[in-house]
Length: 466
Ligand code: FRU
Image 1 (cartoon, rainbow, N blue to C red):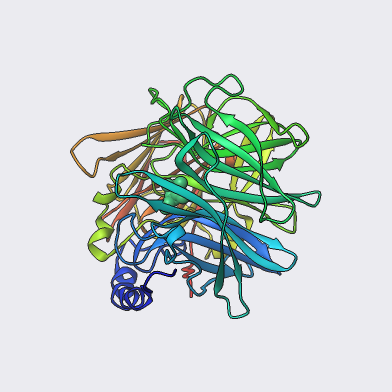
Image 2 (tube, rainbow, N blue to C red):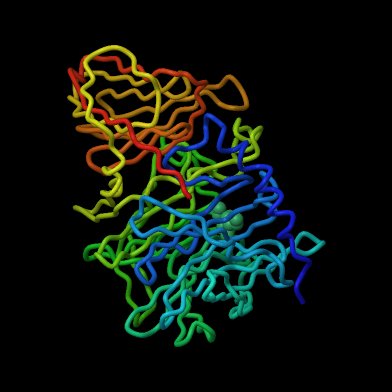
């Protein structure tokens, strides 16, 4: 039975909210953000019939995590995106508390969404259904309903299907919590996307020598990269360290050997995917030209998100820029999508003095021994010394200064600035730090330290979703 449609309310929210969001000085000029309400995970990132599709978790009705729909953008060049019809709304009994995260596949020429129907009960418990939906000729989607109930041995926290095809068979990883409240990644396989067999647990607590690895692993994504497989996921409950795992929840990667026959993944250590303040729930896409692209949510749940100033303008959160992944000498490299150079305006050479803060890309070669400091409008500070990078900003909740760290020799930096985000690529992608910041405009970018005798920067052209 369908629940009453919330479309009229959604339409009203967009009509009322969009002008306010777009007029906000913190609204991104070239990143994806919601036109109103709350956006979180990227979903269904796929290349289908010559177009790229990026869906996302969206609550159009309020800046909270309650009414999760799948909204949809598409693009033919990964730079210019357009709004598509809203794809999924929580309007069936089996997804009534949210059309949660998932992926998209090309099933014999039909764009098919695999998502989690989240259901909460009055006693505080919940269940989850893995569900399908297929695209219609007009760009809307028809739900096919649940194809997988909660597997035995797990709590109601089983979600975020990432589905792919290998040698004619479908595979799916799911984030899960077992009955002992330990985080796991589950593997399923299917001939037709409808009937699924449980292949077992492939990563998580007590697997591959991990002991305490948190109570829930969200948003897994498993893919080949170079001669390895890489598993990306978001383990909740990983212990904080002095300079790592400082966000409420991290996104991590681990590399190893995935065996389809035995359904095992032998992996090495967990590594934080991004050392900045905001980065979560990333998802990857294999392009037809052979690249593995990644996009993440530049937000983290349950931290200070509800204190961000954009809430006053009825919107919250944005995506990261798109990145290209490569596996080099045992490390996962993330580089800015090569197409982004098309957003560059004229090349400028910085010599001295402050710059007006505005969307721009900066490229610096850094000399190890010299200290360098960059102040982003008084709202975020980067400091480089011989140990690496420190990124500092004031808490939105108190006067405390929070710091994030990247450790290692810093040889070069490419920094991508938007109205309220900074993405720092270290050593051609060896490290990345993604963060939101909320300067009061007009603001200045101040570079100090001897290192950058001169460096290049490019104002970035506005590239809004249409
Ligand atoms: C991660 C997450 C997913 C879930 C979605 C709900 O941010 O909690 O596990 O599917 O968000 O919006």
